[in-house]
Amino acid sequence: MRIIDRAAGCKSSLLEVFVVANFAFLVLDVFLAHSVNNFRHTAEWIPFAFSAVATLLLAAALPRKDWATRGSYAHGAGFMVGFSSVALGLAGVVYHLQSQFFSQWTIRSLVYTAPFAAPLAYCGLGLLLLLNRMVPPAKEEWGKWVVFLALGGFLGVFVLALCDHAQNGFFYASEWWAVASSALAAGFLAVALVDRREAFIRVCFGVLALQVAVGLAGFYFHVSADINGLSASMFENFVHGAPAFAPLLFVDLSVLAAIGLSGPYATRKWCGEGDSNPQGIAPTSTSS
Image 1 (cartoon, rainbow, N blue to C red):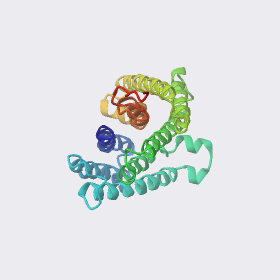
Image 2 (tube, one colour):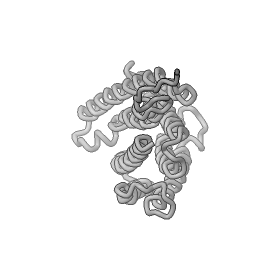
Image 3 (cartoon, rainbow, N blue to C red):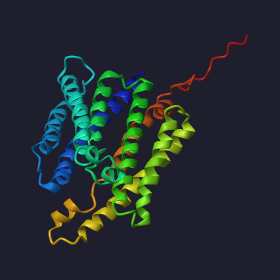
């Protein structure tokens, strides 16, 4: 049981570090994204400031590792940031759609509007914080919820890749990789919610490795396009060119899914769950 408790605590810590790292990265990502229009609307500073504050609040709680303890700083800070993040994400979706889609209601306006699925990242991070405080990591439900949220993330990436690459009519055939790969990941993770056999979990890890490869390749293509952009300013090329960090979502979500999938696999493999003789003790003979 000590090994199982340690494994559960490790997963919980990994998830908390994952969330903090993502909030920290969103500071830069939001800054670049909203620099396209020079933060024309004051409200565009809200996710930038929120990401910075959330990073500081949650980072201070990392050494405590008591996010599930009622009344603790980590517990309270996680709930506050979690609920606020979900609200911010939903508001961001509506705000982005208001730029064109709600006024025209066409596929074209949906493609060329602000990326409406992007703010849902805040919803996902907020739900992960709430999960880590409401569901014990030793329970199977914890891993399933993590996988479910990773699945939702890949569905969001599918929509983002489809709309973003549709803006140039999928000029390069390689732009379909992101669409096909995210759909593949979503399909396997959906099955993983009900099929927890070790053999299938191993296949899922292989699919996640493919997502990492696609994400790194996409990052290379996007950065190369920005470096060779038309503007003399490298900053302008990165702001108005291909979103350099968007393909890294494949890597990010693969890490998240791996944390959720590793639960049942690691428990059975290293903690002896389901093994009638986990300590390897020789059975005693009962025959006379």
